[in-house]
View 1: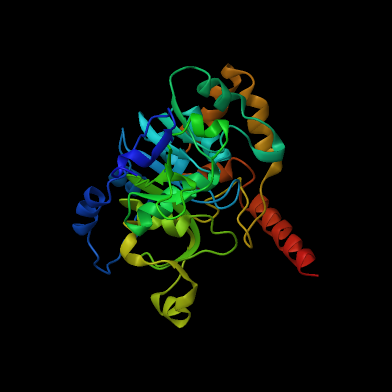
View 2 (view 1 turned 90 degrees about the vertical axis):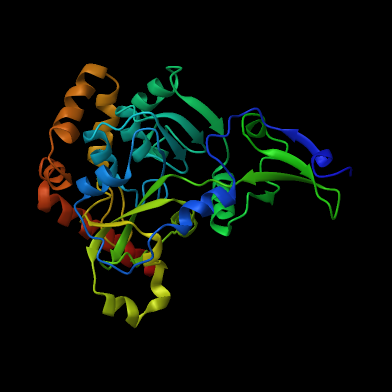
Length: 336
């Protein structure tokens, strides 16, 4: 090797949308308040305060599970545009943000598809419009990027993407390992401007509990400059302290706590409620016709004052209780 740059073997041609420099990120984190204060506020206030045009946005959850759907609707209602987005295991939330044309650049790992339900016609039209910059990654590569940011280092060495076409479209760099001479792909740190994470329980300070799959949400909370938490329910700090090991996200990473019951509806919230498959099917159906879809969005997002209003227009509490019963039944069956 001849210095640091001589061991670079190859780099992807994708654009890097965020700055991986940990010291510039740390400069921001140093001035962030660590006060243990009440951070509860309405979701509309949190989006107004912490989600801005042009920001880079990342969302918690995994696929249709624990996605911050209520927050995505609010972002559309407030008309955010020109945002960057981490398309990390995104499904219905990507469908919603595409409908509002909220973003114009995306780090792609899993988008457009709603898993076994099919592809989103709206998301596909937007991605094929030529108005969105795209850099490709794998789901693991974006997880590694968030891990690097959470660790306060500019990249983490991995072996993911090696030998793939995805590498060509990424902003990843292949280097030679200084110890073994083997090829390693360096995943650059990803510091989102803002993250929204939907959790099961939180206290007013922002200590959060997540049940079921975590994905990278603990790393995301560390990596993002601003963190909005939406929760199924608020619990007391005393309850948090009774079982501290259950705290997945600590309060000092969090900027806003918004209690939004059924905040992942129509998605699946493990141990809380099952997904509304009929409503998701309706989404996919109406997306096929742009005029019908515009009417659908007006009814279900732009014409709703909040998430409760949206739920009331789609079955209300009767529907929620049915979905809760379905989830609990599946849980009992899985435990046998």
